[in-house]
Length: 141
Image 1: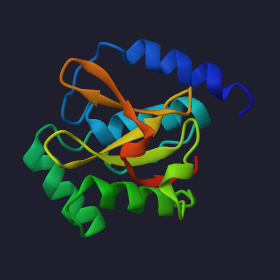
Image 2: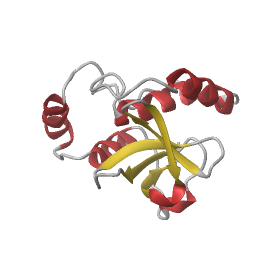
Image 3: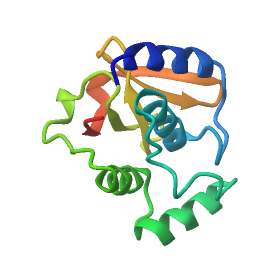
Image 4: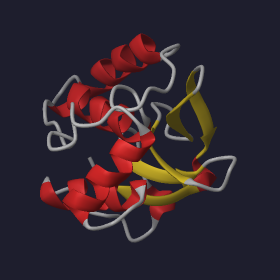
């Protein structure tokens, strides 16, 4: 889509202060919503509206993907929608889907921000930005 940087910018502005909420604005749905804003494709369609708690998310992830982590959800959804995983995650570019370790060491999902130098994810009080050096895995959007 030609105007995807503008669409991503508008999406990020709209979510700047929206805090984390299971099943509405959690780390994976935030990344999936960003991809939806850029491409019109909902990579989280099988998850959307089907959980509202951490336990519900974990059970759904296990049932759908057979796994138990956000990275496994990202991998499953990316494969289902033809997003290629990058052999070198640090080569991720603006708008790409990524996983990274949060402050607790848990892997979360996010996207590469518009500058291409930071990863953007949702935190308790809104969006957080961390160095692209924190990327663990990445998929081309």
